[in-house]
Length: 114
Image (cartoon, rainbow, N blue to C red; front, side, top):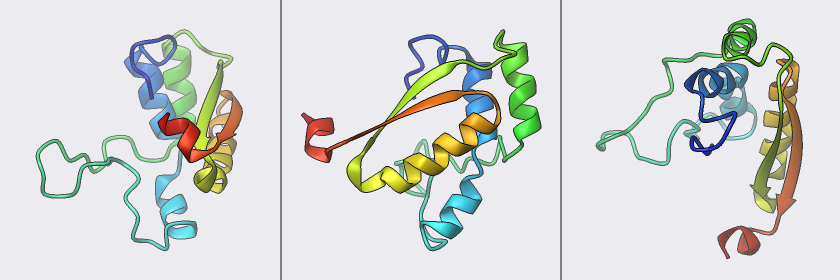
């Protein structure tokens, strides 16, 4: 998530997005219960983030969006590599439940890197 550009430059929006997504359900359904979805940094290393500060709470996500000035949500494009299209679809569904209209853009992994 790019924290430099609106609306995700607002910390309340970033917290709302985190609260809108049930990462534990995604881990169980897609990751077999062993995948980390909170960080790219391995557990035990500096700057590891366990994601527990903002548990899944769609009502809290809506409150945070309203507090951030987006009571009706906003529109965003979520770009994912082709091998994560299922996960992207699930995240899109969670975001839309709290009013964030999400355009899912699935692209080839090599394009994403290039």
